[in-house]
Amino acid sequence: MLEEFGRIVVATVIAWVLFLSLDIYWRLPRRGGVSGADAIGKAIAERGGDQHGGWMMGNIVCSPDASAGTLLAACGVFVAGIPGGIAAAILVYIGNRICHDKGYAGTSGALIATIVIAGFMQIGFFASDFIAGMVLAILTIQGISHTHASRLIGYFWRWRA
Amino acid sequence: MGAICLIIALYGAIRIVLERETLLKLPFVNVMNFGIAGLIVFILPHPLTLVAAAAYFVGSTLEANAIASAIARRGGK
Image (cartoon, rainbow over all chains, first blue to last red; front, side, top):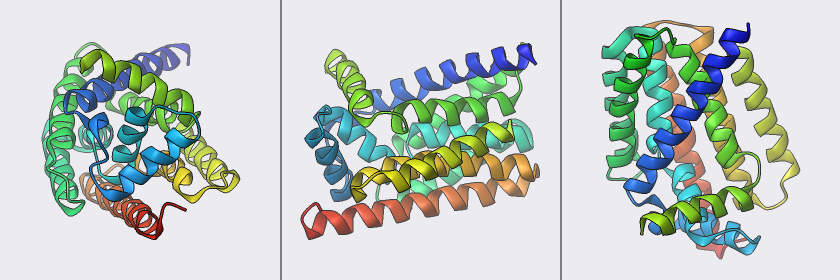
């Protein structure tokens, strides 16, 4: 029980670092990719959040990004091993194209997450840990406080830009 | 593990109801979608379930995108 809890905590931290660094690498906080993401970013900024962080959160809502790629890659590895992770990357790419996104963040997120999860499975982790971990990681960004999460992303974004 | 996804999906649903502004409901919708997509895979661990989870996730993301862009076109409220 305690061991399982520890694995989920480690998987959450890895998923959190993985999806935030990929999203910021692909410049998601730079602007709202579609009009809806732009509007969500401005609404978060109106409540006292950071504009760039808000745009990134809007982009996460409006198109499957690296966080969705990580989740679906974990699901794919859980049900079908590494080929499942690659299938997840293809599905995320199709999803990105449906949502008028170029699909770099989602597809690279799914492929890198597949490699990372396959690596951690060699040292005793399960793919299911990463499914729960990714759900917990997105909870911390999108589900607790928009103001504080957007300020945190904005801080990372200024560091990169 | 499925219980974690279920609890987070329910938490997201409660926050959706409590949030007043529609645009700011959407990040909580995103949290709920993550929870449910994970839950689908835990309920039915089969290779084809991945397609179901991806279809659910992409479809719901597209809906959130549509709602947000419709509100943006109406002037942001």
